[in-house]
Length: 373
Length: 172
Image (tube, rainbow over all chains, first blue to last red; front, side, top):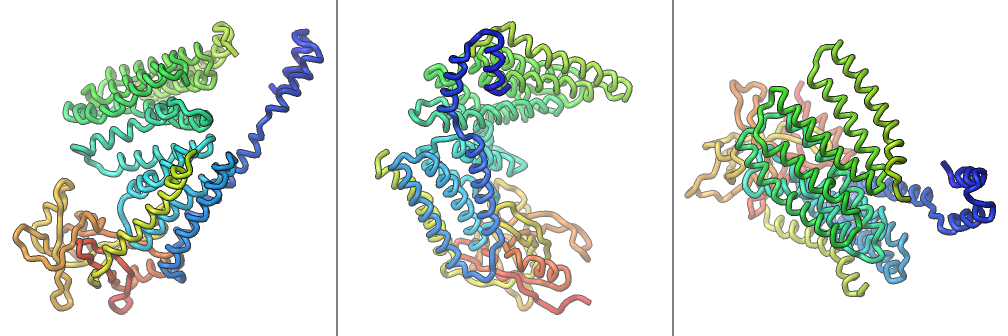
């Protein structure tokens, strides 16, 4: 409901008078932020960045390699000029736009070097090189969600590409896999560290961290329908060393600096890590209903704990996502366990009723909990 | 923010890219040029653009078992014998003036069945990045005539593919 509608409804109900409504309107207008403008500028920068990469990818024959490399280095240097100027004058949005452009120019440069010198190695090498060159400038100068989302997305993509590159990982590669698995929790840990004047950047890191943590933990439950041998479980345990350490670190940072409610920290970080660990380090066969049933219960308990914490801490959106995730998993149960059309149909009807009941119950549950504003 | 720190983080991308150019130019200095027969096709990389994927159509000598084990290094010794290109799997004590390191050259080893071959054999696959404008013509040439890749072999054993060339008349 828009602010004007809300104020009109409150005036009519006698909660506020006309003078209070006018003061509220004036205050909101004063602190209004041009979200639509920022979103459109962000989309424009994103399109510009993709265009730069594609122009380099076209790899024109007519231009000599040295000219391409020289022009690109000059372009890179030229983009750092506005960043220097705007940082010293504290012009936040010019800095953010120029940082985004610098990131695009650098990834285009890495692609250009690959074309000129025929570097046909795996993609993760290019992505990790970008992270090595851009992480200091992004983490030190980034101030808003725009640069946070850009850097965090490359961080998760680069480490994920490293983990997915090879079919067989042994030895130190298991720790590299673990680093990729720990990347969402690492983003959350970074977002919890105290950095004055960088709250929005931290919020962006937190958003990407929570999204990828919950998404990854949900996908990991597929392991309950796969065979996990004792040897597999041993490898997975090594992979989990870094994610567990990072999760502990993030919980400590959260308790120390209180940027995420403590009640949400444990189900979000410890709960997801425990649920993933159960799925991948407990040996189990691929067939049989028992592992799948345990998988369903673990999934529902994980998301149920997050839903409960979201209710207590007022994170409405997270509560809605948690309830939806549980509902979808219930739906999938009927596809998995009962294969015939008739029984699946009955199961879908029952599931539909459950999902509707959950959606209606959501709003009542919030009212019963009397959440703080 | 301190100016020296701001300058340092802004200089890092420029210095890093410059160092990348320097490293690759130094590696290519003194490289020898080879013309190797190939067979291939043309897909696309999301960041680096169009490329032609191919296999080196050379004769392989020696035991290729080590080349399939990712935990072991695999090197080949290139040699020209008249019109033929021979790639021998290097073993300890073997004299190898033209050493090719598969790992640094990003060459993948596969087992495949080639047209006209009686049984599957190990092949060595690579790729060359090409411009968007030249990719369709090169792909057409790959389908209609025998092709070769001109590559530079650095002293460090890295084989850098430079360009594709026809090596015979078009098939009728």
